[in-house]
Image 1 (cartoon, rainbow, N blue to C red):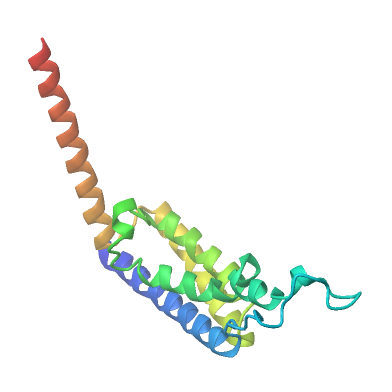
Image 2 (cartoon, rainbow, N blue to C red):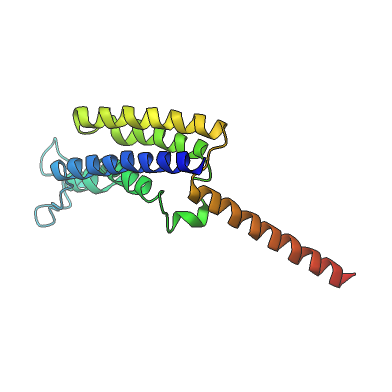
Length: 174
């Protein structure tokens, strides 16, 4: 069963790598601008149609909250790629099962693939959705990858260790 889980995990990583590629292509075409107009911005309105507070609106639209849209496929692809052998993600243990991973792949498809790079994004998005649905079905059958099984063993060991140390402290207090 772990072999099937590993195949699903690697297939999910492939879709995340494609999301990362979509993000790189999109960033290459629409890279945020570093254009600040410090010397031409004054503390007064240049004309009746322009306000001085909007002088650097190009910067805020590229690097402010509006500019996050440009980075979404890149960051989602990077995050999804790290899920195969996560270093930092292992601390939080995401994904613990294929239900979580399947939901992640569907979210990745909807927000990180479909709206970017034309047909490439749509094809990758549909592949992520299909794989996400397969992962949800796999979760229903209890299929896990080797990494998920290792994390479950570690979690049980930590819980057993915490439980036994709690029993020891209770015995000492009696």
